[in-house]
Length: 213
Image (tube, rainbow, N blue to C red):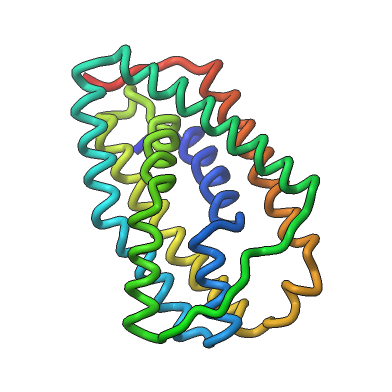
């Protein structure tokens, strides 16, 4: 596992992301508001299950490459910092402009919701790109193999997604009209994401480290 400091930073950044609107959240909220908790929960399970494909591809593949090329490891970390800063700036711009959560009535229940959640997350290239940019930022070679740290963080992130997704599913099924009447809540989420991503990007730029041998 990474150091406690890195893990707490990861926890804060990952939680900020989980509380920010995106395709998965939009799907879960739509299912919850239109079809109830049970159907939305199947959608969350589908999103979680996509990690069984994403985590091995990203974590194990990256670790092997990083071990052979420390320079590439650092290049990916810096590129990741740029990407995270880009996400932070975009989130702050959305916070300033405001806007409505993507809406729409999703059809089907149970199995259909699970498959849709799985495919939506799996086929979103931004998920892979973000994992590549995100996970290496919170590893510390002094704490052990980089691949093992990334694996632990990725599994923890997906588990957090399952828990927060369940919360969104339940909440959406109980407050159907509340989100529509309170757009300020979405703006607060965007502002929190922007601040968190810029802070992480700054930490990466001024930190040092390389892949474990």
